[in-house]
Length: 393
Ligand code: SF4
Image 1 (spheres, rainbow, N blue to C red):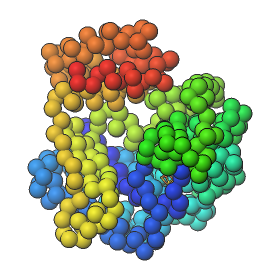
Image 2: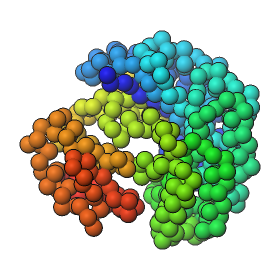
Image 3: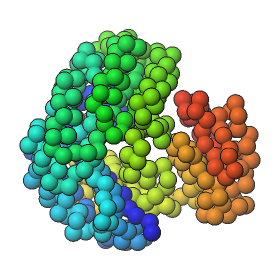
C-alpha cells in the first residue's frame, strides 16, 4: 500500500550562511507565531484547497510514514509552536504505525533540554548541518557554531536517546584543503552517525558566495574556494573513506550504515507521494506537482486572507513522468527497474528510453543488468550531463 511523506518547511535561520542557496531568511522571532498559525490554517484547509485546484484528495488519505521538518532551522520555533504543529498534523493526516520523523538542525541551535523536548515530541532522526569540522572554514561561511559545538551536539543527541543521526558535509568551502577535508571526514567517522550526506559546494547565483565566485569580489573570500579538481578529488576520497568506514553509498550524495538510509528522501527519488507544507514547499502525487508561494510574507498574507498558499500547479504528461522516473531514480546507486517502468507506462512508451539507455552504457556512464539500469561508479560526478541526455526525449 502506498504511504505518504509529509514535509514541513520552516524557512528561518539565525544567520545566513554565505554558501546557502535555499530560500531561508533571518527574521525576528515575532513572526514565528504567525507562521505557525498559518501552517495550522494551511493543514486544516488542505482538503478544500485541493478541491478548489482540482487536485485529487486521495493523497490526504494515505498513511504517512515519514515526517520531515526542514528549512531553515525548525527548532527555532521552540517547543510550544512545534507541539501545536504536531497536534494539528496528527489530527489532520492518517499515520502509519511506523513513522520516521526527521528534524533538520544546526549545531548551537539546540541545547540538551531542547533535544529532550524533540525526543518527547516524537522526533527520532536529526539531520545536523555540520558542513565542516574546521573552525576557519565555518567562520568564513558565516556559521555561528564551532567544530566543537557540532561534536557536542552529537554527544548530547546520543545522551537524549537519538539513535539515528545524519551529518551534512560540504566539499569545496573557502579555505578547504585536502588535509582539512580529511580531518572533517575523520572526525565524522569518530562520531559514528548513522547517515552522512556529502555535498559539493554549488557555484550558482543563488548564494552570496556563489555570486562572488562568478562575478568576483572579496567579501566572502571566493578567491579561496578550491577549484573543480579539488571537488572531484574530495568527492572520490570522501566516498572511499566512508566506504572503508562501513557506510554504503545509496545515492549520489548520501551514505548510510546498513539499513539507515533516509526513508523520506527516498520518496523523492522513487516518485512516491508527498505533501509539502509551508512557504515554498512542494508536493507530488505521482501525476502532478504543486508548490506553495515561496515568499514568506505572501504565504502569510494568503492564509490570513482565508485563501490557499498554492502557487504553482503542473500536470505531468506521461513523457514527463517517465523523464522524472529516470532523472530522479538514477540518482540512487541501485538505479531503476525497467520492468516497473514498462508496467507503469507501457512498453511502447518506454522503448525510446531503452534505446537511449543502451547508447549510454559503458564509457558513457550507465550499467544495464537485466532490467536494472544504474549509474556506473565513475559517472556519479558527471550525472547531470548524463541526465541531460534524457531531457525531452
Ligand atoms: S543554516 Fe542551513 S538553511 Fe540556514 S542559511 Fe545556513 S545552510 Fe542555509
